[in-house]
Length: 286
Image (cartoon, rainbow, N blue to C red):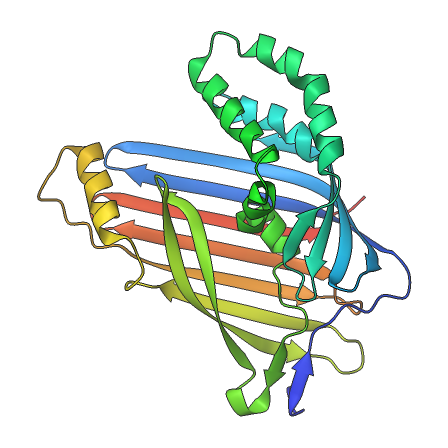
């Protein structure tokens, strides 16, 4: 029960804190008669190393990654995940990603694995194009950080909810925004969101924040969506009205690190397109 005038969720750091998680992501979409489905499971270790003047420093290490789909470009994505096996991330006070501090080490790792990757995909033009695009992000200021911020995996760990004041006068709710990048081709899907403190245990510090979002129809690139889908379907009188919703839930432990989280994005164009992604993060049972 919430009784105080305001609550703030902030990291309680007296010494480095480490948590292990299993991240499960499932994506399904259909476009007319075409259907895509994939599941990705990732085990990782996250350590809150220290506080800084601007926020915090976290180290996130990938322990294992598995996925259901074995064809197409999915094997390449697993190979390229080696570059994310250890990320040292600086956040702002809210926990939003600012900088990858070990970028130079990641570039050195790419030099090491590049020959084997190049040989493996030498005759696959699509995969080579994806590799070139992915590596360009390492050498473009701020691009790797942007990609991590928009990733369901890293957003689920670091949702940027620290240092927010949830006040009774506003029903413990805060307006926000979430852009789902590359939702339809290269077109982003904007959601207006409301984050609400659902529970806060004053004795333990355990708390839960829930987020609901609806498509920001005013800022959605409707013309771009219509043009792309009509080109993909060859139907020029196609209904391209896009409807959908977005949900998130975050539970924090007594130190105010994530204990579990979930994200759900779903949108559709009636009779043509349906997309759904679910991402859950739970403690890893060693």
